[in-house]
Length: 171
Image 1 (cartoon, rainbow, N blue to C red):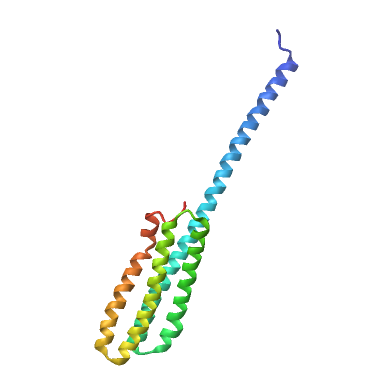
Image 2: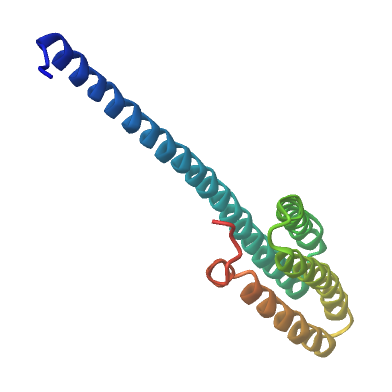
């Protein structure tokens, strides 16, 4: 059978269309996967921002409670430290909400609940330290040792690199 020029042109056009369809399907799959990767990266970025903010607020609570206790300036404790405490609670709640909704990593919810309990304990110890320094320096120094120990434990627990190295993210 001889192929006429019409059949040859039609066949080559058909092959071209088939290749375009295959390529289009391939590109669609790649773009869909890329969209998923972008969403995962955005979520990871949000998690990092929240954890960094939590870390900052915890350090600020530590700093302001120490300053308030040593200077016996209650306003630093009540205004600045309390603001950072409330901001840290908001960050924790946002992270807890995400992981409870995603329900992909229940171990992170436990870790975040531990941090939340320690944050409350840090706030209470900061207030106790302030009151102890009002009584006398020796009691204040003893309270500060306990307060600093918890502050150090929390700073290490909230360390972003450690958290994400252990698989805290979902990416």
